[in-house]
Image (cartoon, rainbow, N blue to C red; front, top):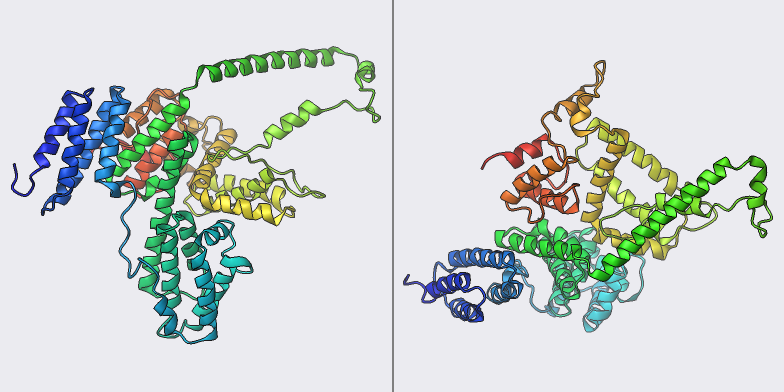
Length: 540
């Protein structure tokens, strides 16, 4: 036993006992007791032991999960969270002053705008819940009334007046402390993030360089806490779709290996649970499939009957209540409505508005398309694209302008969807890549491996030739065998924990690829190209 620690060997022995007697609850009680005793110790090398123990405990949890011992795995997880809480919620970044409110800062600037700012600040501090609600309703900005709007206007006035003085950072420090008060006291993590995000989006005034870095660090910290909070709530309510969505958002912000392992494990559980349908759902699904099949057969029969029927008999099919003498097109309208629906990873209802929808305001689903699609296309403009992909992006912009220019909608709906777009920025970026890939497959059905065969010999475009050369030897992620090879490699490198026999390259596989590219290639997209394949299949 090492002289520095009295209990580290006991913890190691308890872990080994849990492996040997995995169904005996006494093993986990001994492990929890040993971890508690070790956690109270202080010795020089404790940091190294902490990282090693965290990895060992995650390995033990994985072992128990594979054996089907979920209750025992949860016991280890609870003991680990009690010992290493910083691996769940991040440690606070070092700040100049983050605890409490230093009201003496108001005395540093003697002006009417500062007095007005102090009045608004104290009212906000007295009712944090109301302030958080108004921030959540996007009222912390210009030209807004209420508690949040008045505070924003008062801050801008005093910060602009002190921009050239030695006390330029004073109003920024006060707002920084208020944001931390929302995070620590009211647990309003997303609203604390919203305060700093709104202030830092101002072109002028601006804080000092050092303080700007600290504000940015705090903003990331609040956002991270918000994601973990949503994951916890989704876990308690069994909302696996929301849980997986926020895990995907949190993953790029995580740096510790053991925390990444935890998130991967939680996501794998959510996906697995989502796939397990109860018998009632299976029966309902079977009934829906059979019903759809029957409707399809009936529709074909009526279609054939309509084709064989003479033109002169069309008048006999008219409804008595139809004075125009036209056949109802209800089924056609339903098909058209379905064709206008837009898939998004967040699972929200979204549909394309008709071109130039004059005479009416857009619905909520159509407003989502106008705002979501614009954010998607702006994301595509900010990344590197091939010449062919730029052409596809141009077509997508054309369609968006055709359906969105001169459209009318309620301001309330626009604000609501803009707030959704802000929260779903990462998901919308993934949607953009999906749309580009889907459109390229529609225009080029023999994409991937067949690209080289369909290239014209008289094509003198250097950009196109380079694009096809890069596809040589590229695995086809439409081929189940190539999908298996790619997933096996992602699993080997620790970025995928799921089934390997996928028939299609789904969102779970894309997320695993995105995590790999973010960690190894410093890229945050899900594109599959020859550089990504070489990086994935290269030996360390």
